[in-house]
Length: 318
View 1 (cartoon, rainbow, N blue to C red):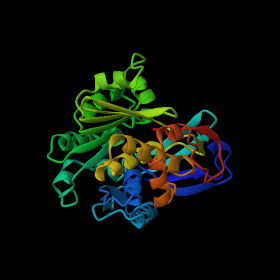
View 2: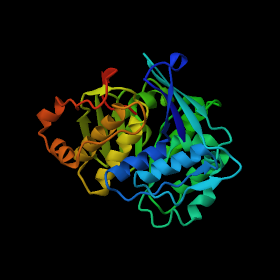
View 3: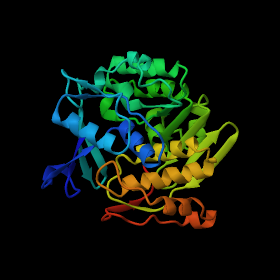
View 4: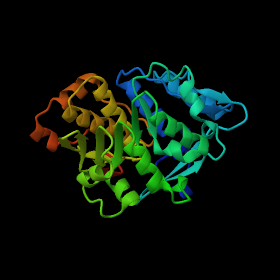
């Protein structure tokens, strides 16, 4: 998707200008995976319009294979507009009838998916159209392991079906990411701890529950691992959950143990938190390696250095 972001960061209604960026959950994950040196292909559709040209150029320029992206001559590229405010960022979507909303399960039989070792999907795609929902259903029943980020966006579920649909999809995936506050909004205030989320989603072999600025907890079979989030000066939080997922998946791809995977996820999320767009620069490879290796007591008090003017303090969001 293309994204319009107030520049400088502030409420949309009084913005002096808008910056053009690229957004979208799956493309965000793909770009951060490429940043981490993981071979990745983004499979989607854009319109035959300037926004689509911009999206393909930027995602491809980050090192992502975009040969699986179709250009649709009849439907536009999806668009979102960010509206940052003191209580968080609202996102306005303009994607009804977009090129990506016409995706369907036939995509899974195409050459772009062949040879994948993992397929990453999100609950956003499930909300776009009946054909997109069928795409997720068939992917979860297919031979390629699936990583699924619940990524609940209330505005995309006006019929109220999100709790049942997203729980069903998540429980059938191999790797699942969900925020604790997100789980509470979907499945009730009785979901008070990461363990409560695990009880609701026993199916995934690997479940990661993010608890905002506090910590993230991974459940892998009987093993449970929690890693606190570093302190981060937040400019704008949208996109940090995608960055978190990419960092975690990059570590899994390298065979890292869960504590290091959660650390890399937090550090990747911090890169998104510190910029107004969804994609920010990672620390150098040397700095990342040093941060991943610090003792637990040092990690627990870690503050990630700022790379942009700060708006407020928080940890990883998703």
